[in-house]
Amino acid sequence: MTQPYGKMPDGTPVDVYVLKNAHGMEAHILTYGGAVASLTAPDRKGAFADVVLGMDTLDGYMHQSVFFGALIGRYGNRIAHGKFPLDGKTYTLPNNDGPNTLHGGPQGFDKKVWKARPVSGASAIELTYVSQDGEEGFPGTLSAKVTYTLTDNNELRIEYWATTDKPTVINLTNHSYFNLAGAGSGTVLKHQVTLLADRFTPIDSTLIPTGELRPVKGTPFDFTKSTAIGARIDQKDEQLGFGMGYDHNWVLNRSQAGLVKAAEVYEPTSGRVLEVLTTQPGLQFYTGNFLDGKVKGKGRIAYGRRDAFCMETQHFPDSPNHPAFPSTTLLPGATYHAITVYRFSAR
Image 1 (spheres, rainbow, N blue to C red):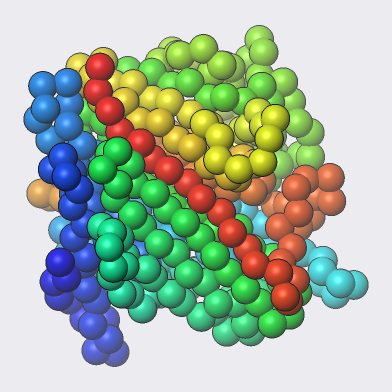
Image 2: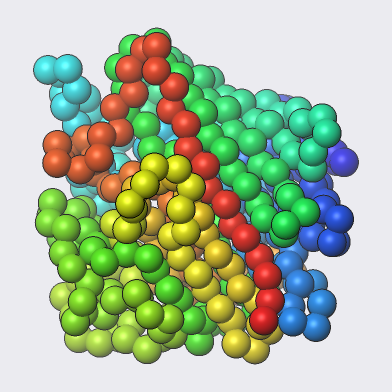
């Protein structure tokens, strides 16, 4: 089902696509930024709640700067000093996060209206966007395609593809903010998180990775066993200080290629469980540290600090400047392909 959602200042129409599955789950996907505007999931009693933060109107999405539910590109996360080398040339991007480029720049994929079409035979939508050579400083014309599928296993499956006509860098992700107690129901500090990652990438004071892959053991970053988000988030720790909490990339344990489990989150009051599976090498776990109550979201509820968490599956931040990290270079003739699954249940 498709409904009009509003118009851009230049008159371009924006639609919302409603996906439903056999168990009553719903996902609302906007063509603006490919944003997941709403996602309902059942609690242990079968009661549904919207578990993602967002806005009530297109104008609201256009005037918030925290990427609610959006598709992120051309490069998710940060690139140091807005510069990276590729094929002997240095490319310069606009800085929109202190001295760095964040989430593809000030006019990234989250600010674009994607072309959309329903996928026959499934509760799914296909979104496409062509990023022109030089857009936000990135080389190559990049053709991106993303499908959202709401399965009868209560999964939101996101699949990404891209091709380019000249060498470029790419790191696509989704920036949904989750609160499994229900969007707008307060902090997520009691949510219990497991991350299947023995290492993380420490950052400097501007949130750029140092290049080290540091073991989590003995640090506040050890979520190898289920731990409440709030258990250690305010400990005196240099890394937590830099991120104002958790805003770091974890190096996922991976013994094979393909889709592997990366994380699990349990919310004790509702019983809702979120499992994250991905083909990606990393996961940015972010605890909404920069939400400050100024953004009035759905129902005009003010979203405050740590009222949500993000699980952004990805390649590592600043990879183009770290040759030892998994490569984010995409060459002509090759296809970028990644899958992430957000699976919901209750216990």
